[in-house]
Amino acid sequence: MISKSELLLYNPSQFRELKAFYASQDKEILSITKFILNEALIEEVYGFETVIDITSLTNINNQYHSERLINLFDNQFVFIADENYKSFFEEQLRFCFSNFKIFEEYSQQKEELQKTDKKSIGKKHKRIIDLKTDQLESFFYSFNESLYGHDKFKDDFKVQVDNFRVFNKLGEHKILSLFLMGDSGIGKTEVARAIHKALEGQNKMAKINFGNYSSDNSLNSLIGSPRGYIGSEDGEIFIRVEKSDTGVILIDEFEKSNSTLFNYFLDVLENGKLTSSLTHEIDLNGFIIIFTSNISKEDFKKVISPELRSRFDYKCYFSILKNQDKLKYVEFRINSVVKKYNKNVANVLDDDFKLKVFRKINVAKFKNMRDLNKAIKQTFVQKLNERIIKLH
Ligand SMILES: Nc1ncnc2c1ncn2[C@@H]1O[C@H](COP(=O)(O)OP(=O)(O)OP(=O)(O)O)[C@@H](O)[C@H]1O
Ligand SMILES: [Mg+2]
Image (tube, rainbow, N blue to C red; front, side, top):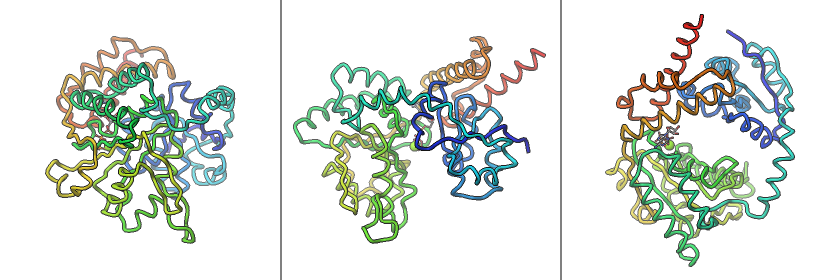
């Protein structure tokens, strides 16, 4: 086993500063949880643009699995963890890391953040109904840039938003709900990410995966259990919405859940608020809720009740991207990866290199953009190695 050099231990109360510190280097922090659930995702990420937070390995508490997982990442990755678990990691991952270092450099970001904090006090969630006309224009510009293809959806979405802003003011339309169906890896979840980004969200978007809520007790874990019961506290959806800073909620794999949850959401869409079993409320007026699902057009009618179906403002079936859109996506990905490589590793990759990678990828072979992403990474690494061999 090749040991990674160090594990950086951060202070969790300063996570925002840490995030800003890495953002200034064009790096994003991702939790290892994402990769525990789907190891193939490791093939899509690059060490020079990603920092891996391994704190959640404390939950699985299995040395063999943890070591194996960490070794699937190449040596370009930076690993971080909550400093409260220092001794845990020193023990469990002593073969993975040669040094466990308390990391403090990011705390200089604090003053900058305090300035922005002051500005955002008062209004917590930035909502589409809060935007002025010129801000709305840049919202759509950013949204349309982030999502490739799906032109009909983009046109429809604009109409939906315009109507929503009018009727919401009149008090007749509290939540804009979109139901997106279609094959895997074509941008359904990306729609929610793009809206969150276009609303300039800095925190994590509120996302709930209904795939995790298929058991009978699911409503309790989602909205909290009644006071007096073990674990009586607010459920996941409250925590997520509280932490987010935009009026967007993503409900992934909606069809995986059961009728209790469907009915709960029927209520949410009707009343425009989240109510927990502790009678704690969050007002969702002006929010956009995006539901995504892999069910086919035919199953949609079987699985989702007519009451609920009629409650969605907009339903759309996403089809596979056209080759021209995939090419644009590939071009964008290569540009962004090369830019980050040049910034974070060595400033050596030029347009000629980009073209070599670009020419090697046959977009027609891919339906799922995740597979396309893997192919981009493989080709990038391969061309990088060829380049190094040529230089020697
Ligand atoms: N139309 C698109 N525009 C921009 N990026 C896209 C698009 N389609 C897919 N991607 C990228 O591909 C990856 C997978 O897309 P996404 O998560 O949106 O898939 P999905 O349709 O939600 O699939 P699933 O049903 O499996 O959840 C993401 O990294 C996303 O950035
Ligand atoms: Mg998805």
